[in-house]
Image (tube, rainbow, N blue to C red; front, side, top):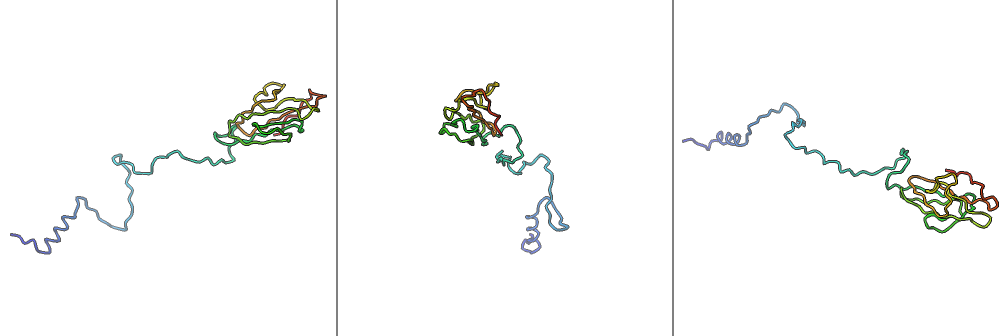
Length: 170
């Protein structure tokens, strides 16, 4: 019968029990070895792009319209303050300029009339109804604001109602 109490047999048993079928030799400092995936292992890389990003709003955007959800500016000019103008249901004003900032694509309601009896209502420039040489002659009109936009109200003198106003200034 064999004696399994000898130190040699015990050491050999431990080595056999801890061995593997693959043997490696270390000939230098440890380093990470990258082995290309041969298609048999699942990719454990980073998760897929979720598509969430933030628009930085850089000034290099030169498109004709603004991105959806972006705010745009409507400037309403009252030529020589000869009209009273209401923007989006606000109080009528004889201010030379009124500005509102709205989301792109907003339809803004505009109303205007003569400031006093020295003038007559003339027309709008730059509104939805401004599609003929006579411009938009309705006192109440709209403009769809898709980019920074300027519109103008014109109320010429009552004694010279056909005198046109100069074009609005951008």
